[in-house]
Length: 347
Ligand code: CP3
Image 1 (cartoon, rainbow, N blue to C red):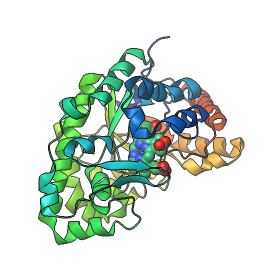
Image 2: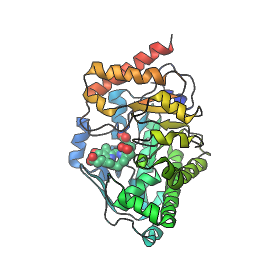
Image 3: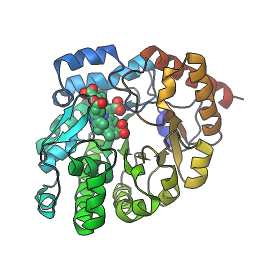
Image 4: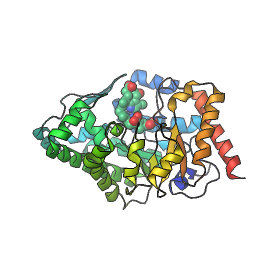
C-alpha cells in the first residue's frame, strides 16, 4: 500500500483527487473492540502501553478508511509532567485532585519534561511513524481549555471560577497562560521530532468567551504558540471548539495552516470571516450521525458542496464523535465522502 498524503496536501491547500476525511474522537467508545479493551484498562493505563495505544490509534484507519490517524491520548496527559494529579472519570471527564486557584498554585507548576514523564507518548508516536500509511495527527489542549479543567477541577458549563480568575487576577491568569503555552510548544515539538505529521491545538471550550475577552485573555498566548511552531514545516491546525463562529475574525493573523469549524457556522461564512490564508476543516454536526444514512449523506453533501469550492478543505465533524455513533454508518459516510468528492473534483 502506498502512503496516502491527501490530508497533508489539503492542509497545504494543494490540489487533491478526493477530499481527505478524519473524525475528531475517531478512536473511541463507538467501537465495540475499543470498549472491550476499556473493560480491562483505563484511558491513562492504555496511554502508558505504547503498543496498545498505537493499536487503538490505527483501528479507525483500518475500519473506517479515514485519511489521517489521530494519536490515542488525551489533552490532559502532559499536565501530569507539570506536577498535577488527575483522573479521567467515566462519563464525567478530567477531574483534578488539587485545582489551581492561587498565585502560589501557578508558581508551583513545573516546566514540562517530556523525556522524563511522557516517554510513553513519544514511543507510541514512534511506533505509529513506522506502521501508518496515513499521516499521524498529534495534538495538545490549548491553554484556555486546559486551564478551565485545572481551575474548575472538573468539566464545567459556566467556567465561573475560570472567568473569576481571568477578570480578578489577570497577573495570575497570564502567568498560567504562559506556563501552559510553554507546555504546548515543547510538547508538540517533541511529537513532530518523534514522527507526527501534523498537530492540532484543541481549544474546545474557548467559545464560552466573548470575542473581546478571547482577544484580551487568550489570543496572545495562541498567537505565541503558533509563532514558536513556525520552525516546524508540518501543518498546524487550530480548533476553537464549539460556538466559536464569532471568534473567527480574530484568528486572521495566526501562523496556523488550518482552522477547524464547528457545525453552527456554514463553511462559506467561516471562510469569509477567516480570510483566505487558511485551509478549513469540519463541520458536519456529529449528532446527525443518529439520522438514517440518507439524511447523513444529504447533510454531508451540503457540507462538501461548500467546502469543495476552494482548495484547502478537510472533511470532519464540527466536534468529536460520541459513544452512540455507529461504526457501520461512519464507514459508509467515509466511502460516500470519498466517492462523491472524487466525482465533483474530476468534472
Ligand atoms: O480523537 C481521538 O480519537 C484521539 C483521542 C482523544 C481523546 N481525547 C481520548 C479520550 C482526543 C483527541 C482527546 C481530546 C480531548 N480530551 C478534548 C478535546 C476534544 C474535544 O472533544 O473537544 C477534551 C475536551 C478532552 C477532555 C476529556 N477527556 C473529556 C471531556 C472526556 C470525556 C469523558 C467521558 O467519559 O465522556 C475525556 C475522556 C476521553 N478521552 C475518552 C477518550 C476516548 C472517553 C473515555 C474513555 O474511553 O475512557
